[in-house]
Length: 158
Image (cartoon, rainbow, N blue to C red):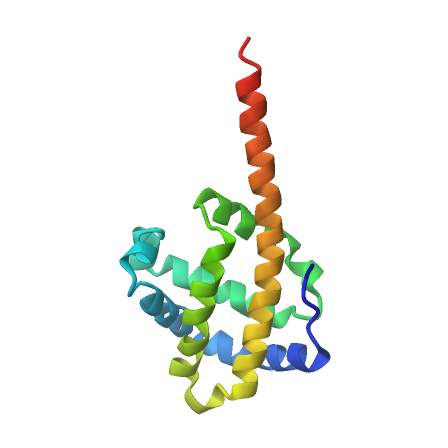
């Protein structure tokens, strides 16, 4: 079941869009620095996409789009489906989401400083988990679909 974000949380998240537009890549780069302290976590990511800056830019764009569309999430259906498919391709599981949350919120504070108030960080955390629940649900369906295709393919051996 997806979390319902309060009007106040949605307004706070939406109000961060200009800061995310200006500092989003810095935030995501800092988040990855925090994540990659753990070599096992770092190994799960495409090193070339990290070195080129492609992955931090893509994530920053996704976070910005989410903040800008927090009141009209239907506008993000296509991107969410692509994100979920990519996560399934790379083996992301629900237990990986807390690691990202634990790296993202401090990264926001590191980059935005005093502008990252407790209210902003709290709203960002609530919004992160609301989106995470959507992604986890889509990923679960894709994992089941993939398993069904594999099982279906292995059954018909003629």
